[in-house]
Length: 559
Ligand SMILES: Nc1ncnc2c1ncn2[C@@H]1O[C@H](COP(=O)(O)OP(=O)(O)OP(=O)(O)O)[C@@H](O)[C@H]1O
Ligand SMILES: *[C@@H]1O[C@H](CO)[C@@H](O)[C@H](O)[C@H]1NC(C)=O
Ligand SMILES: *[C@@H]1O[C@H](CO)[C@@H](O)[C@H](O)[C@H]1NC(C)=O
Ligand SMILES: [Mg+2]
Image 1 (cartoon, rainbow, N blue to C red):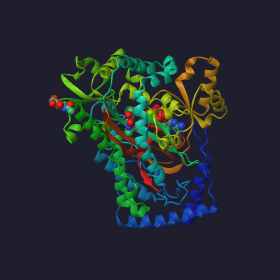
Image 2: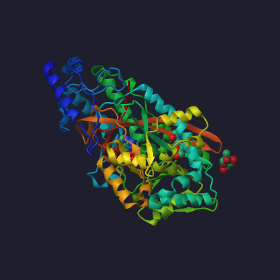
Image 3: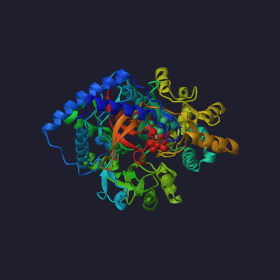
Image 4: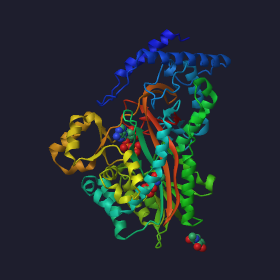
């Protein structure tokens, strides 16, 4: 099929397209320009791979792909725009169209058979009734190349961040002070701070502390620095589905890797869900009441419920019973005993694991806030406590990046240097130099309110507009935001699959590293890295959420 000539012209047309890539809110994405020699090299690899995959095709008949209109049938001729670590890698994306169809079909079958699924928006009850209206989770057909050195670096940072966040959470005054201006303009953060202040007043001690977190990073293409996007301390999503995507990719590569020039062992194994489940079960053990249960706090409607069920099926894996409750249900069905025991429908709760409660919309009435307070007052282990939740806010992230603040919480100079190296530029809106620069060059910044869950950040020209508006108004509202350096990861071609349709896109990726931390008084029981989440999105999209529809689940391929 593809002669050298046609693939060269395809590569060229791709090259031209990529040149005009720009973010939808004005920030242009730097794209490397290819020399003729490089294009020729790509072309050669391409022809070689095409021959290999054609040989593979002739041996087996293709599955009829009546399932989905495959938009990516013209997959031939793609090339990566830049090798991730500067060394030539075997290009994972130079694949013949029939091979892509086969991979897509197998990937969709695998997802359906293995529970890599989410609720389908098109089906009304899919967010409330399990087993109704399931669709495969959006995923990337092949793993994303990622340099091994940076992968190791991210893993080594996990225990240092653990220690840092744990100490920050114990410094109630630091949390209250750092967030005091935010409190005046942000009602949601203010409510959390009120609960936190009440706990400080009664000198409430959390002896057993459980953190199930995810630290997110992007690899900056220009500086080759691994930079932290943020540290999630509440409701870190996808420990369940991310493991499945790693398995899916290892499975596809073990079948087809030889034709793709890819080796499945380069996709790191991912046991996030098992390690999180172990940490939950160990926390339950520490509570030391064999009749107590684990309570998962959820939103009334949750299309990402299967990710949660992968983790919360603790009875099957550890013999621990769980219940799922919304905040409103907890308000109606629970009580606090004099000794602090939290009771729900007559059963004692050992661990409260929050997969809701991170956004203002989770608190439509006072009922939900009553539930949050009641849980906080109880002796149940909270994952997270309000202090942990606050320690993960964007404002605290920005405060920690200020000179001499890390020194307040950590002693080891090497640890401090390592953390600093992964901090992107972070500024308060008090910083007039930063604000002036962001108004001049808004495409280099992201403006963030104190929110979780995606879709809240401000990019491009909107940064300028909002900053100017805040300046004119001269109110305290600027304390609701922070400014962050915008990170530009390497752009690579990828096949993104959503609703059974494969889209060939220019994509960027974000690596999340899960961590679990459990301690009982002075005894640290768990402090470990727990697998990873790769999210890949169209390079022109600003936000990164999978559930919010911006990104797909992915895994990584070490280079
Ligand atoms: N400094 C940055 N440079 C480039 N992209 C960014 C930056 N900060 C955030 N993003 C993008 O926006 C997404 C959401 O950002 P962030 O994680 O800060 O918000 P969030 O609302 O807490 O989201 P989540 O629910 O995923 O935790 C990120 O996943 C990333 O794709
Ligand atoms: C998780 O967060 C808690 C506080 O939120 C912290 O104590 C713990 O060290 C963190 N652990 C990891 C692995 O990130
Ligand atoms: C656990 O509970 C049992 C009985 O309820 C008690 O005898 C034991 O001392 C407790 N263990 C710890 C470590 O608190
Ligand atoms: Mg977040």
